[in-house]
Length: 458
Image (cartoon, rainbow, N blue to C red; front, side, top):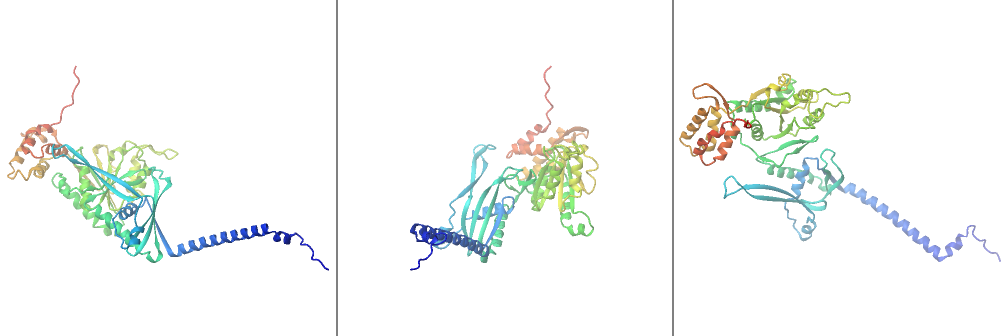
């Protein structure tokens, strides 16, 4: 009888072994499960790419706080299941405080009021917008901004491809909410590193009429700015850079910065502020910041004379010192890298320190002195504070005569030079101290006299 020859490798014997056959079977099932899982993940990824759409908003983007504020709005989701799916369980808080005036002691500070804004915290959330469900993922990265040290953050919105148009409505509504929150307020930006950041909370718009300058000064600046804003096409057609520069000079307390803030509010502009005397404000940083100005903002360059302290030339390694140089300021204002669509205000208390190269047309188109208070200004300020009680103007006349007696308008009653002046800030301080007592303001006008410096006893 013929016998079958044994397998070359003895595989038959191995497969006849129930333990080995079971192990091979389990391994095959594991491999099949792994391939199936990989295939399922690939299919899910493909379906996700085909069926879902993502939008990522970085913290550096202007829309980032708008989206967080929009997510913080209360919304109702009809239906038992929808209302529970869209609950936000992880929240973060932003606290702002404000000190109110005391009702018991005039002029004293009252209790501090706190306002708490709850926002979606880090993690995943689900919200419903119209008929679309939107998955929200807010996360903080391990990397940080090298200039500010703040960690990078992003918010990612995900919805079905069929509902992709909901993103346009979401951003539109978020922008509307932000505009409503800032309505009647002026945004003030400050240079932080090489970025523009909001300086505190938006401030209530200051009425342009509350800033009292000498006769005709305010009106001439406002008329020139509005004429410039209405003539963009005129500049383009003639190949002229569309930018305008103003230099406000004069002693402290005249109202230079107050006027710029009020003008921004009147035009519905923001204020972008750079202090040229700040340490670390270099030529390159200044040039970069001016190319990234926030839209619809007035550029305010304070202490323009500070740039004339550093006339150092660049070293071979490109270093020009720790502050803005004279040439760096000139190049930033109208050099090759200078931006367009810009209204710049420069302020200085020392006009004599400025170089003629700075104040030529193209860099500075208007120079306006905002100096000590004139009789005209003092009268208008009196009317603004006490006009409702001084109906016949007698108090106003007494106050102006008192300032004449003190020689605070540059001349004495007899017409001789007095050498004395007073700032509008000092007059306002006197009126604020005597809010409800116009006779007290007249009686205490002597306080406006400059106090001579104290000398040490011999």
